[in-house]
Length: 595
Image 1 (cartoon, rainbow, N blue to C red):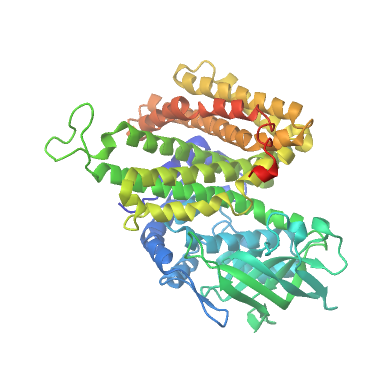
Image 2: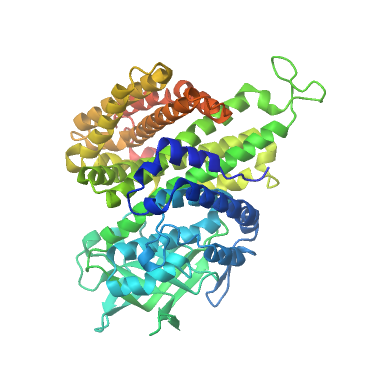
């Protein structure tokens, strides 16, 4: 069975859990009644399933081709699919109407992006990076820069990238060497080499707009001296069209484990012409606008690959005949039973569904809060949205990519030896998913960001607000007998998270290694607690449908998977708490030469 976009799941979250119809008075939502949202999701599903999914294996097997002149050809069919993507208006879905966008809610765009990423992650990275560049310029660019670049980026006529990493530095951007020399006319000469630049060179768009971190001559050392520049592949002419070729060149493509259909480039800037975005030496702060959005997108990618892998595994488990059920034949007229009858296969599939359904809700819920941070008239709601976006972005990025990869690995296990071959799609899902744990900041860096920065920010306001919201939900629903298992599980997980937070406060300050050693277990505990909250929200919505007489098995199945999460997945939270409380002593005990 080929990939089937989960539109039914999306609609349940948007309509019944998030209740976006109640936000019709806000910008964007006013133009997105639920019937229109449903039409958009259905059309996006059709494009993802019929256009992008068939190209997924093509991109994997063919890959991108680099030539000596620095040009890159994308896999067969990608260029034509990009034209359909642009002509269909998919690139402009959530962009500002003032610059050619459609201005629809970002959470609707996120649902569409999930479907396209499940169908073809490598292809979907091209518009994903483009939207990131669009966001950075929209946030920090001058009026002239916005007018010139945003309409082209919003529609997908031009593409965008982010140029951060260099051969000698990745996460520690204070070590970058790319330099910027003022030309005296408002432009700069940008010189340096950048590596691992996703979508860095290709043949699908008329221009590629690189956002480049560089150091202006005489700037302070370290991250305090980094600036951000627009460096287009072709310098726009007086009419805003691609003009003179800039001295930006792709020196080659990386040989990678996965995402072969995306051009991961080594880019050389040889006195290339660039334009400063924002103020000098403020580049890292501006780039984080783009990076934070990309981190949510990477969380979505982990979820998306997990969804595609789960679907493949479930279909295989229904068709593959192997052995007999321990409780008696379930396919008595056949030579064997489908492997779906075996409890261990069911365990892997149920683990996957329990994570995917709540993980998707957590991602959409957080994205919606990000929109409220910009659009809601109530200052308290805006502040809460900002707090949640800052606090939960590292949690979502690390937790969903780690679990998405595990789901892809379990999907391969369900396939058995078949999954280890290239005759089935799960090998590609596993390989493509693996990068999500690494790029846009490794998951270990996300955990350090969570415990080292986000917890203490504004006196702990965000984490206390999140805990307070859970407490309020538990109190408000304490008398709901149908919801009791979900309330009890959520309350227990929240108590463990609170205990872990207190432990970090008491032991992390005394020895920072304690906080660092505990960080990943704390992030996982946070993720499990967040998903428990999402299951409680989904169970409340599903119970309401059942109580109203809706006999759709979707809701009964939802509640069954939710109870599975409580009994079979959420207990991992206790193990996370126990491990993090051991501190750093044994983690750091061996001398370096013992490794």
